[in-house]
Length: 89
Image (cartoon, rainbow, N blue to C red; front, top):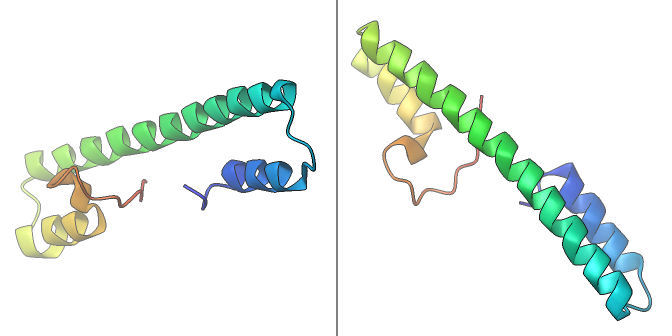
């Protein structure tokens, strides 16, 4: 998740704090939840677009070796949800 700029910014802010009191800790945890929710929503939207594109390829009877195979190599999570590839289009 640290390839997302918002996570990097959050980590830098956390690093810069010299004293993490209970008030700051609660604020940071709330901020983290908001950042994480926004980024995961972007991933979900991207994955839906990827699934829609895959469906178009199937309906158009796209070449299995020239199109489908390459698409599945780029987005292996379509076949195995345990893949952590976060590539989205």
